[in-house]
Length: 147
Image: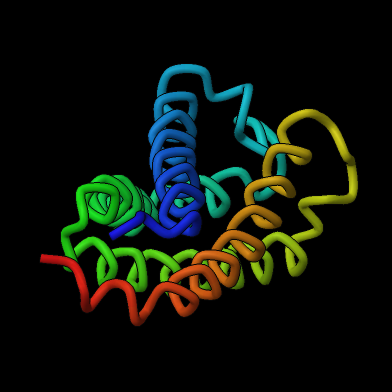
């Protein structure tokens, strides 16, 4: 059976999402000025840092589901399909959570490099979550043919 083209797209999305999440947290801890929208000394930095540092577990779970799911689906393992459904839901939830915090705390008022990265993250989560779900829906029948 021929692999549906959606599987190729889902593999790319999963690998890209997983790698981007890992890169973000590497930058957060080792190159903070590149991704942190508030800097030490800024008003509200402590609450901003506390908020952001509540996310590594959720983000690593999303990265693991995206990477593992994409690779498993590529290898025609049905569990990869379900892992990507979980990743799509998590992406949508985390994107909405991030967007709400950022808007309520005026994080996009100064569109500097870090806030543009934050905006890009929100747009990617809110775009790739539903796109992944749509692609998964399109291949739902093919997944049950996996052996």
